[in-house]
Length: 216
Image 1 (tube, rainbow, N blue to C red):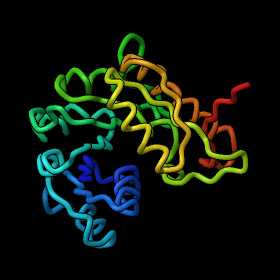
Image 2 (cartoon, rainbow, N blue to C red):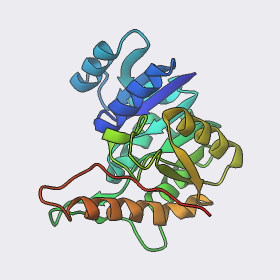
Image 3 (cartoon, rainbow, N blue to C red):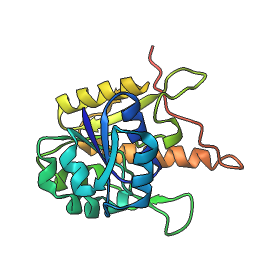
Image 4 (cartoon, one colour):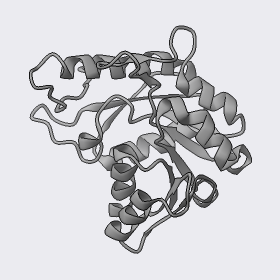
């Protein structure tokens, strides 16, 4: 399968490398086809990895992963060209974090709205699934915790798209909890803040935690 990654940060690099490890081809996109971080990542990751623009990555991917800063989603998707996402599964990993008042951050989009919903509005013919937004990049692939595999919460309007993303998550070593339609992004993005606030409850902050749903 071909995977397009929009974003060159830790999340994009981690997920891109994980997809390659599972045998997929990955193109990392950024604003500039000659982006140093993307080119270095591709060189380090091997022959199944390549780099290009946002538009290149969106056109390349059978599945596209949105891994930009949440507050930059609209700009990145506009640069990529919204038509390039038509019919595709888009995995939205982002959180609209606002660091203007320092850390821990707040959400720039909240209440009766969310970054996930805005992505679906921007890409009306894509099948957007929110995932990977409630844990740090360190544990996104094959998470290893004493209590067993943690759970990743997902949401989206397309049942088949969620089934496909759930399969990817299981390949990555996660349990999967479906929390409903894309409007549930409002709560999953808030869960990111819970994850962050717990990190800052320790001195120094620790990022080695994840969520798990226990059933009886």
